[in-house]
Image (cartoon, rainbow, N blue to C red):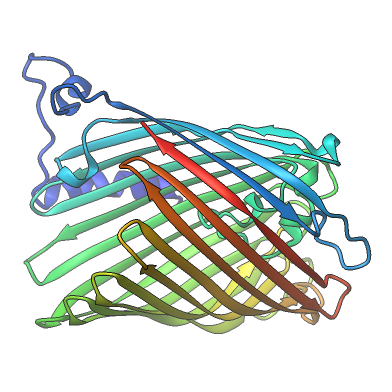
Length: 405
């Protein structure tokens, strides 16, 4: 079952559990009636961000280290049918945010990367859905290879970024309220990556999960459900994926919450010689804490299995922290840090071929100029220690400015 089948089932559930599609009343199209904005406010929202930063290892190499100063400009134009915080029945938006890169020394790496997104949300008393699509070219920089939207699982993507390529992500999330205490949640995504060079094969991954959640206490929800998907690649065996999962959500207070998703991940590989399935315990746990109106803190830990761009299984264990602190009336501080251990396994020989220990820390301080302008200073440090010649250390430090209109 592909994500497109999940989309079809979503509209079946929409009809069965109380969703109401708005009829065309003849007073304008659905698009015209959904675009409801305050007088004087345009549905177009332009923004731009510019960063200038020093990078002491632009090729992410241990043996060959080259530094440069990079200018990164991201103009963005966004269309919104209404203000998102108004929580209208229909909300849709789309945007274009190209990335322009200019290197001071390695000018051959200068690049223009086209990127865009589209989103549609619907909500009724008993049904919610969220459709999202993202497309992004990549070339000339390794920072975009670590885009959280695509959850890049290893630095092989970053090492090949100079070749250029295209990534796409389609995601759908649904929530159906059955009784006030029981909810069906479905999620599905389709993710693909293509390289301009033929040295790495294109790959595609889809995955879908279902949860039946039930409120077992005033502040606690518990649920179970299956997950299944595929990872498809030409140069290595395809992965067949099955999950059995449990989910727990608990609110200790209005400003402190905990979420846990865990279970078993089972993978089988389409090889010429039959191999036994790979079974792994996986989990994602997260705590969010807001001790004051000026401080937000989150701590997460995880154990996952993913497929690398080379078709290997990647076993990942890690922790990550995020701290957002309002220092003064217009000053904010952001800290992001984490460490991750990755083991790479060949699905044919079923042996571990590589072990990486990856660390990162980012410090950023921002000053708000007026209502729509922001200036900031940042430093980012990344370190990867590998037993297969993939080690590197990298510092990036610079200044940023963003403006909304």
